[in-house]
Image (cartoon, rainbow, N blue to C red):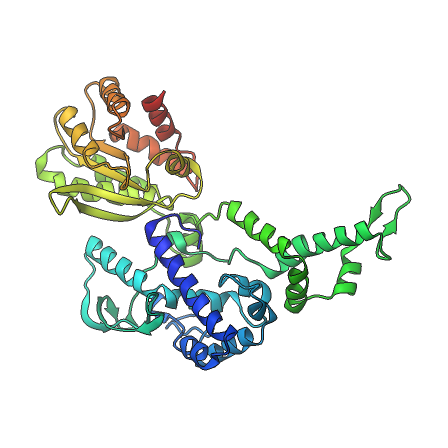
Length: 441
């Protein structure tokens, strides 16, 4: 799960901890303990992810298939040899482990972080929660055991719901056995045959030597058993495959992808923008303005900035931040920003003022920064009497090592919306790039 955030790190830890616990039991011959852990896993219908029509009724994981997973792992040479390290490796090297099963296992294991996310999003958007709802199995990474409790969760006629951040939803797992076999293992075996000048080597009329994939498959065979056997001989091939996957940008689904999959409308950018810029400046509509800005920015910066927290308390509640986003960028401006500056979170202050924005508002936002929370924020307001002067003040703040503030007024929001409509992934963010360059140039 390539998700650069504290929430993502928690999920990765839980998945790795569970999988290593199961493998440890299997390798030490404690098969009953391994089977007991796996049998807790069920199809997580409360997320309503999948292709079922009507009521969710997934078929990927249940008591019988959990038994199959244990059997596949316990009989796997890859598991016994230590070749398996991560849950995703099973897709490459264990027969009977499908992408659907990996997805279901992961959802079960990270259920507790999903519950916390669901509760926070329901609080943000005013979704009713019901007390005393059975949580389902939760993984305790310290005790390495399952537990359960009662939680506050949304409930419908179809049962309880778990919300899932759109930024972590994928159509396909990044690891693919066919890709690994054809483009990594076979290519390596081709070089082995060429170096040995074996009988598989053909000499062409132009003097070039070649080894065909068909001849390689005839000699070595196909399937996951072959992948395990040859990877044990050449483990560097698997390391190279994993390294290549880490270097790739695993981009989330776009708004357009999700709309197509769900047969739903894409965000109405003009409506979201109008709900911000058509408000009357002044304190009377300050709350409406903050909510409208959050709705616009959350849609605008998806999938880069996620997990909005409104009126985020810091310093034991002595200070508040209007909106705090988690920076989950895997590419583009916000990825670059987080690589070079403390920007794990991005802070937003909303000022629906009918008067000029000045140093007090700038200092208010910069006082929320810290090396651990992040040092980048957006100050969103209606307009500037002298924008160049305020940009100079923002530069002064940066030069004094008090953080990086990018101001955005109504006209800037209009420009960002237009750019978003022109670019589905919205990664370049030229306006923000130019503003930030002005802070550090």
